[in-house]
Length: 253
Image 1 (cartoon, rainbow, N blue to C red):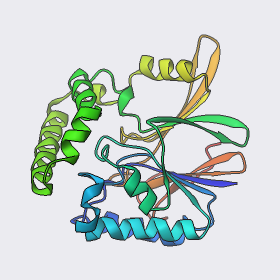
Image 2 (tube, rainbow, N blue to C red; image 1 turned 30 degrees about the horizontal axis):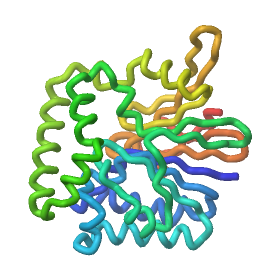
Image 3 (tube, helix red, strand yellow; image 1 turned 60 degrees about the vertical axis):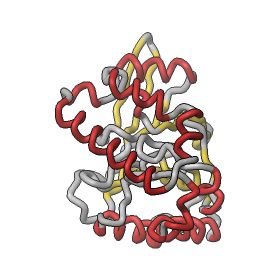
């Protein structure tokens, strides 16, 4: 079995480099995989599925996923903090499936916990308060009822506020909190976790209370340009494209 994991592409029409990398990945890497897991922030902003007919750029990405599914690759999506309004319409158009915010999958008999990872950054209290509001059913219903031009203005303001917050916040509060990570392992009773969001790719072993756990943090596509591959019981970190400037490609099983 072969499974691929990607996160934090932050696709947007104005970023021609990342867009080209994405479509090349869909043509050259993803075919032949049994499963592709898109672990949040596929898009830099997603304003609701109702905008699909009005967004040629999004439709081109949707077509790439749909073509991959025709080649027998199962496709799964998890919400990120930038594209939390992705819905069933988008997933179905891609011939994929939208997973819950945390999901358990089996990899060769081992259970892995998948999530985007922003809920682990509990030191950033301001972000967590905002996250709670934006992920609420009330906000999603409100947002989906707005005209698309209003949604774009709201998204623009949210991005500006997020950029300013990150510029002024201490770096450590933007990373996953150790206790939050430990609690997530305990809550789901697993020893393997895979997530993105932090833009700090790592593969670490954590031992606490006699339990040995492994946390793999996926690369983003603005700085580290990589993906995670699982083949018959072993993980590989792969740079993408192969010449991308990062120290990856080795077996990290």
